[in-house]
Image (cartoon, rainbow, N blue to C red; front, top):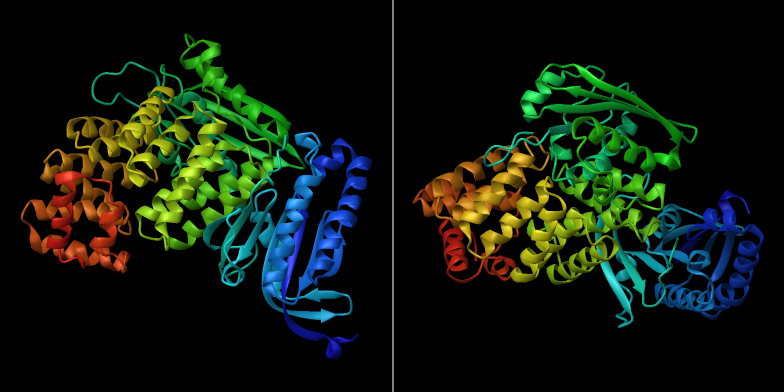
Length: 587
């Protein structure tokens, strides 16, 4: 068939891929190949035929199938996932074959025995976002399928697929029973602890595409150090603005109010990793010690642990080794998942709608590639906190349930992680309004990570919701102090503004809310605090002006709808809503 004879038609496209195929083949090549061939013959092909599908091709670990209608494609995908899960149930967890499936609908070009077109490319990319044993579909597919009580549907919003300029609305369908099991200075008074800032390892960094890796590689180092009560560690976000080949550690020490600065370079080439570090005294600018670390890319987390131990051994030699071991985060089993998480963090700190959408897709891929990577679940729950809180959600109730599920997964995977504990606690109070349970987990977060700014700030927020103004201020001030130049500093400052508002310090509340909105004028949360504070001060005209800014940021804001989600309670809620209405915000 030549180009003029090629047929164009509308169809549903199913793309399937084996989860962890390279790992399975490396473990037992022959057995994996034979089982995959058998599964295709006994489970995959019969169900494709039964639902009227046409197999276009198998590509090693992948398969491409077309159907005349969406319902047939989805019914087939569901049956395939359940059948393969049942067939592989007797295998050891780390040997089970599991599929990711993507389903799209659109126009394709049929040329001989193959198909082409944008719809095919989208289907192929979709499956990478599905959980093992799950299905990812576009919004156009979701609109054509009915509800199934055995399927959990998650709206991922508008995601940017690889090498595609426009976002695609995406949903995931998780089929029940198909999971694949793969293998500074002191805040609030004197503090004599050594203080340190860990800068992104950007020295000699030439490729801007690699910047997220250079920025993110320090995350686990900061985490391990922040988990030690003997150290005061500035938040990761506060150091992102520093980089380049020349670093003035004395100026950085003054700006971040820390005594020590850790800086370095990272290079990855041909599967090898080279890391060089310099630990400097910020008061004198002198280099205390420099080290070089080298290994395979898979040795990254071991190298991070060695760097953490080296720092502690130099500036806090009295810290016991077992305490450092306790503070280390559980590392991901999959380097691809780790890479996706770093890319997501790069997008999360930008806060605009497009970056927000990209971050969710990257986090979904991190979870899909490593179902046991707790930090990815924590950040995904964190994403939903902003998604609901900033009014981006089209279905808040469903998104709240998903945030709770993700936060619960993160706790289950690492019950002592300060990030997981803090996010879980904030989900409990901000989204579910279970304040007593929230405080239990937020206190645990502070205990596990005394230098974790997020733990102090999220705890302050909950203290504010329950009306404890003094404690809310104390904890918010600690959070702000731990995040002196954090990319999310506006959020820490907004929570401090909320704490002063709850405590009746409306002038102070307005000051901090203005600081937050000055750093990020698109944040609805800080705008609401500023509106309520101005209204409480009797500055109605100013409150109305900020109210108009809020409506530009969030055109769909309505006080009645917002009231159902607002975490304040009792008289505080009544007064808060009255002040928003006083600024002219629509009912």
